[in-house]
Structures are given as C-alpha cells and as structure tokens.
Length: 112
Image (cartoon, rainbow, N blue to C red; front, side):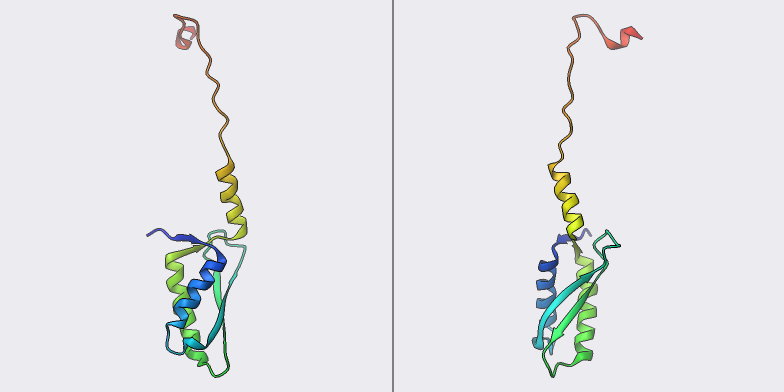
C-alpha cells in the first residue's frame, strides 16, 4: 500500500489527534516530530510527546510508540530537502525536440 506524503506540521497534528484518543491522552499538550536527515526516505522520524503534570507516562509512551508505528505505515514525511527536489522536478521541463524536415523522397535510412 503506498504511503501518503505529508508535511511535518500536518503529521504532528495527526499524531496529536490519535494520541488524544488514547485514555489519558487528553493530558497531552503537544506532539513534535524529530527526524534525521540521513534517511531520505521520510521514514526516519520519531514522536516527542509533551504532557501536563499528572499524566501516566507509561501509558503515553506506549501510545506514542503505537501511534508512530501506525503513522509510519500510512504516511511518509516530506522533509524540506525532499520537498525542494519535488518542486524542482515539477519545474523541470524537457528541452523540446527540434524536428527537421527532410526534402521530399529522402529517408535517413537510405543514407546508410
């Protein structure tokens, strides 16, 4: 199944919504994505969860791990470098092929 390309900010919002659905997740303040630039495939990232005092840290750790695995199956993080490459690829246009008219009756194969 192909993964959906998603920006860092969008992935953080999706992760926050999913973690808040876990019992005890209502105490989560924010979720941040930390990624390594060494892996260009957009799958080398982890979740950092920030919660209010009194949160069950074991439960949130389990929720973050489960959410990370689930999101990595569905989404691929688009880093700035990858987004730049995609934008450059979209702006790239091949050089048009110049067509030359041959005089009537001539064929390029006949000159071989």
